[in-house]
View 1: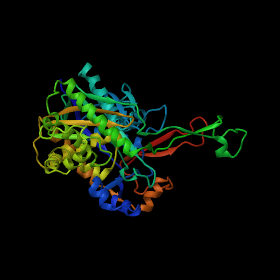
View 2: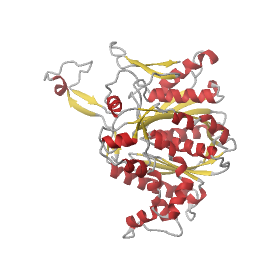
View 3: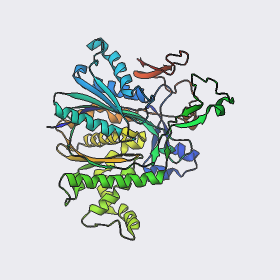
View 4: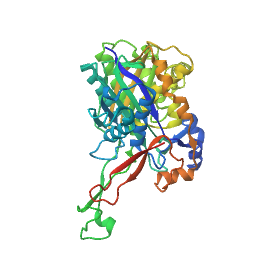
Length: 456
């Protein structure tokens, strides 16, 4: 039974900060980011955009570019680490907004029997949502679902993560006998409970905010503490990179074990490799460890006294660089112009790989793609996908090159004002997209409710 992605749609911000502009304003040598990390542009949400508008726009694009009957969709599962509510899921907003746009053709509440859910595990939540849905369809092949990965990777100004920011969503139609790609049943997994990157709730005394010691009511809060939650994470870049490498090696090894391929150089079976990319060159810079340990001509042991130095040498070798160009590089170009999409990063890499192959008339039907996913906290999953016969038609419909080319550069001043939420008017007027209309502030019953609209 083949189950996987039948079609895929992308929604990203239409504005970006050129990486060169950011580098010059942060006193960083531009080539360190451009040539060293593969970064070119950093997308950033406009005033009217958030993870809900990205998700809804991606799903709406999916319905527009593919023939999907909403009554056939049994679930919309969302992977995200940028939720805006601790109770109401992003998926419930998406369902409502899509129903409203489908009403003229399919009638009211065309998705009324659709299950919705958000799944959160840092950058791997979208993969969890995908695999959960694939397994659900295996139980009843008539089922179909939509999986959405939507996120906003925001970091503090002048932090070491600032230049990896990005945003957007990818929506995928999951079904039996898919046009694009089908997935293996086996998945290698490695999980550890660590604090390499997290977004905690933090608390401060109400007196620190109000200046009053007698705990007066403040915006409906009666408790003597006020909870704070930032979009920006707490993270340790070096430690997170170590966790990334450790988890992907362990998950890769686990996949070999459970599939009976312990004596096989697994990656040699993969025509392409798609990895989670916090920045464009993260994959090529970390896969070196698996390459060095697996390659029969190298077989480098991690216990070797000069292990790290040898890894650096191998990373610069002609053989490894050629391997990267053939297998990993086709997944990088979209990340270079979008930035980190957190849960959407892996799927953007898939879309980029297939778009590159279609653009260059590469026949890929039947080829195997190796997927290496990662989420901080931390977990990695390794699995495989087989490119199906109608992949090229499905990929052409995504129009990925056109979407990513339609982006307007902004100044450092505009970017800073957006980051600080100081702008009240959008930089680009919205057109043919969902927008955040307003957030309720007056009603004591609905305070904080978010309302959206579609702008033609």
